[in-house]
Length: 77
Image (spheres, rainbow, N blue to C red):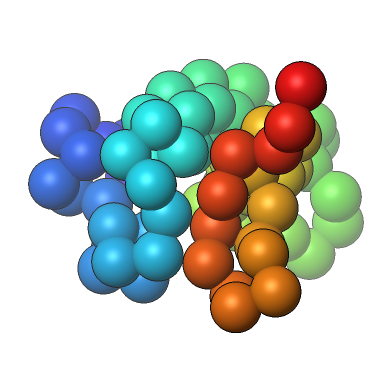
């Protein structure tokens, strides 16, 4: 299920990620949702949603990481 607005994201995303990371997650999730609509493009046994979620998290983790307190923060350049 693609997301139209940040407010549509799961609570776990909204509560833990900064706004910019939420925007990344939503954009990448939606693109991956379309890309992995064909089961032949996904890993065997994974759903379209699971595939899109994994790709979205990977994109977030390229720019953000958890600090020592467990808070998501932007990586230093």
